[in-house]
Length: 314
Image (tube, rainbow, N blue to C red; front, side, top):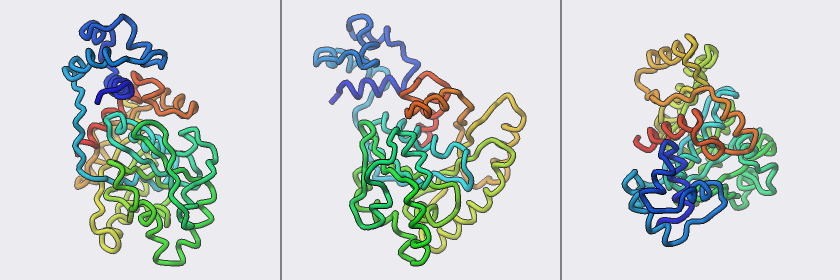
């Protein structure tokens, strides 16, 4: 059933649509939708009845077909490449397409948790590793978070001492993952036991590659790690693809990196979508917001919305 949240989500993922044109076609009062999108007004039942056929005309579809949960580990061996930004904004974009999304912070730095505005929540992932219930925070409709922090790092040595330590994340996610269409795991900037946990618990790995000449160093190590896990511990694990981030099309180096990745890893998908450098991504993060909610007409929002469609289309 169409409601205010779904109308807002539709416009957020379709920023090019003319609000005034939709109002006119639906016979709604002028500027009503603008006020709804700013949170100043609500559409009543009559408004929703009028606007529904117009939204359907422009692509709204309330019938969501679920193909089961897909768990994706978002990783790289180094920090500062856009891994957390990608987890947060891809998750938000998927939720706007009415997919139920859980994002999991597996980095002891807790950057994903901080990005969402949750500073040191009382219950975090390490509590679940210790036998407590998995803490899940609601960020928005269809969009949930498992938070983490520095305490997670103190468990790494303990996890390494037992084979069961490699399956900790899988154990806590398995009972609840069926509630979601997508589970996105933000891995730490290393290839240690926490990242191994993520890959064992996942269906696929999304490798984030910064378009910088140093970013390609270590890609081979990531692929080798995935190959080893496919052989030993998770034979169903696949590579979702490689996503180029912080792209500046004005520079030669960005295109050089794109060409390098495509030429040297021809058997892996390199997404057509590129995440370009954009100040809105930085500003949104500083406001503890995803870029789509912050400015859905920005380059950053458009890039992640396009990338989201590629992920959904497989």
